Each structure stands twice: as structure tokens, then as C-alpha cells.
Length: 551
Image (cartoon, rainbow, N blue to C red; front, side, top):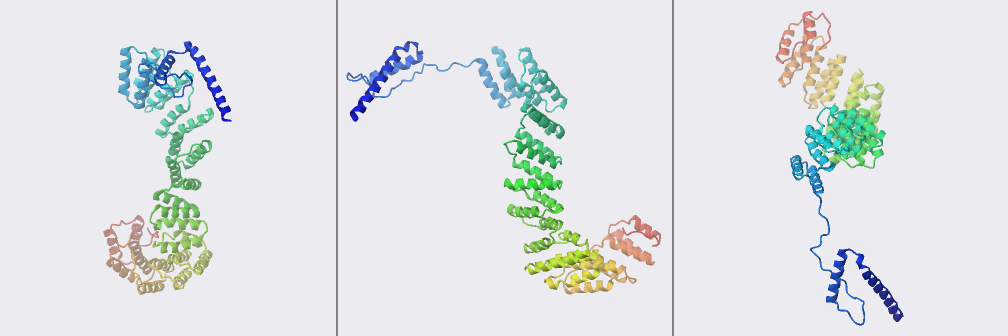
């Protein structure tokens, strides 16, 4: 078997040797370079491997000696060298060097072509040298070179700081040369309009591109979307963004979606905020705290409780410290969504996070409860459910119920809510007593007001300016109002500046009762820097007979 294999191998080698000999016979038609290589390899073969008498088969690889005198490529022409040089100057925006190159070409007698002219125009366009650019075009015409689409593009770019009429003149010249605009043409036009905040013309160019079947470039689309968002058109910006991604394989940058989200949040555009927020979450982008607050306000206004909850989560991931102004929109969103129980529960969550709810925080709860007395009663059922679930009832929740009852002129329910504090293991605060005192004013219930002041002192709660203001006005509702002056002096002793409403009420009461002490109150009002309103002055001049609303 080995012998037969050797015979077959010798046959194949002999056939190749015959083929090589036939190729050497036809070497007269091969180029010179092949002859040099062949002669070189023959010389090397002769020196390195002498022919054997027994066999003509070579058993070593061919060796080649490099020929340094051989020129493999032809020299570049002068025009080619200047084309390459002008392209580099245009890429680096070296206008002065490009002009010097043109002078060298003139001295050498090299005629420029369309490539060199366009590279020169590119340099001039970057510097907005419009006159020089048009002079270059005229020189092209004198040389018998017709402008192409790139020529007009450079002219449009050079005239970007002129009025739009200059650009339209260039477009007309393009049409006269039967050069239709392409994507780059519209790109230059849209860039000009977006730089001038001319959104209408930018949209018109986008529409014309669609009718011509041209594709909008990514950066240009982002510029138009950004402009629409900044000008306060969030719906338009969002529609442009979604339409671009639906018709293109490319995707907008995260910054573009953030701009759409910010514009929608500033305009309280519900649908835009929801869609953009979902897109931002899908892209794993973390908005800043300011943008999160804007989104929270939109969620609170329109009752988007799920969105508000997600924003609170993002704020925690962002590393921002939770504050009262973060949870206030969440409470509002829950109330507007009809989730009053969750709103009450959020107050406990805030307190457990060392965030103290205020009257402003519970304002949305108050707005819901004050609509109907039945809603006030149903609020107690919600609090009982939370208590049965092991949740802690925050005192601001009961304060909201008290305020709602007083707004419905139901002082009895308000007092009943005040007495329910121990049942929910809560302690009233100064806002509780201030709300009850306002109810006493409406009912002219001085006795209840005195009892509330006594309990306030027993709890060790220090009265604030609002407390003194309401107790003074409560005293003025009585026939004997001497205590009003006592509390006024006590208020000043506590370093509180009496508000204008206090002096207004005292002056009106004294004038109506013929009490000359109104002049003292009037002097103090002026000393505090307040001005006498027209209605109050008319009331004083009429001796209290003219009924005017309190200013």
C-alpha cells in the first residue's frame, strides 16, 4: 500500500514539473517585474540548492532578494496632492491656510477643480464669510465649473447668521440648477430654524422631508424635540419623539426624553408625564430631585397615586433625604384618587420616618372631608380600620377632621373629635386648639374658648401668634371685650407682632361701641407699619354706621 502511494505521489509531482516548464516557455509575454523575480529566485536557487542528478524536484522553499530600485506605484499628480491637502484643511477649518494653498496653486499653474473649491467653501462657511463664499462661486463659474449640491450646502451654512431670505435665495438657485434638496439640505435649514427658535418652519421642513421620502437625521430630530419642549409644547414634543422612534431604528438620547418629561411636568400634562416617566424608567435613567418634585406635583394634581409612589421610591434610590414637601403631593394624589385610607396611613409613615406632617400636608384630606358631613363621619371608620391593622394614627389626621367639622359649622362634632384624641393614643398640638378657637369665634362661644386655653396650658403647649389673634377676636365677639386688650398686651409681651387683622377688629369694635380707645389702636397699627385701608377709614369716618367688610 505504501509503495502504491509513493508511485501516485511521483506522478503528481512529475505533472507539476511539466506545468512549470511550460510556464517558463511562455515567459516572453510576462511583465518585467516577473522576470526580475524569476531571475532572482533562479539565482538564489542555484546558489542554495545545486541541481541533483538523480532528481529535478525542489525540496526547499523559494527565497527572494528585495529590489530597492523597483518603483511599485506612480507619483501623485499635482491636482491630487492639492485635493488631499485641501480636504485636510477643510476638516481642521483652517481658512487662512486654505487661501494660501490656493495662491500656491496659482503660482504653480495648477487649475482647481470642484473638490478644491468645495473644500475652500467649507472653510469660509465655518467663519460665516458670506461675501468670500459667493466670490468663490463666481470664480468657479469663470473657470467653467458648475456648482454641485455640496457647493450650495456650504453657501447655506455660511449665511446662517443672515436673514432667512438669503437662505431661500440659495434654495431657488439650487432649483434653477435642477439640484433637488436632500437630507443634508433640510438638515442645514432645520438647524437654522431651531437656532432661531422658529419651531413652525422647522416642522414644515420635517413635513416636506416626509413627502419626499427623506429620512430625518437623529441629531436634527432631537433638536426639534428639544425646542418644542423648551417652548412649552410638551404634547408636540412627545408626539415627535414617539413618531421618530416608531419610524427609525435609531433611538433618542436619554437627555431628550428627560426634556420631554420636564416639559410635561411643568405644564402638568398628565399623559405626557406618565408616558415619559415610563420611558425614563425603562431606560434606567434617574431624574434629579427637582424634576422628581415637578412630577410629584403633576401626580398630586391629577390623582396619580401609583406614579407618586414610584417617584418617592426613585428619590430614595437617588439618595435624597425624604422631606415633608416630598410626601405632600403623595397625600394629595391619594386623596384625589379616592384612597383616603392610604392618605391617613401616609401620615403615619411620615412620622415614623422622622418627618412631621403639617397643616399644609393634610390640606388635601381637609378638602375632601369638608365637602359633606357624612365624609367627616366616614373618616372615623377609616381611622378605626387603620388602628385595627396595627397602624398608628397621627394627630394631624384628627386635626383635619376637626377643621372639616368647623368649616361645616358643626362645633359639636369638632369638640367630639378633640375628645377622641386619647382613644387613638394621640396628643393634641397647637394646631388643634387654633382650629377649635376659630370654631368658637364663629359660634361666639367665649366659655368654650376659655376652657380650651386652660387645657392648652395644662398640656404645656405654648400659644403662638395665631392663638393670641383668635382669642382676641373671640373676646371682641362679646359685649364686654376688655379681655381683648389684656391678651393684646400679653401677645406683645411674648414678642409677637400683632397682625393687621387684630388691630382692624379692635378699631371696628371700639368705633361701633363709641369707645375712644380706637385711637390708641389706630396709632399702634401705624407704628407697626400697617396702612389704614379705605374701608376701615370709611368705617371710622361714619362712626361705625357704615357696614363694611373687614379688610
